Image (cartoon, rainbow, N blue to C red):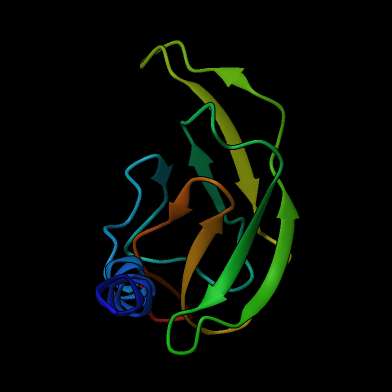
Length: 116
């Protein structure tokens, strides 16, 4: 009986922890925001990031844009190896976050004409 209770409660606890996870510090972006018709990029500084990223709606986590990470490049100032997540083609106004499979989620950011 006790094992059944643990088996039932453990997934709920894990889902709760996941929903309150801290944003990944390995996803670097402009938290002030981006103008809709201007270039938009984030930089990923983790070797765990392998290939893709997603732009997700902050309110309901829907995937609104998918992209491929750029090739790894060395940053001479920090010594980090970075991969660019270019989402310039995404111009929809709103509040979002970036999701990188195997790495996590970014801090929230905004796209709009009034971000500055």
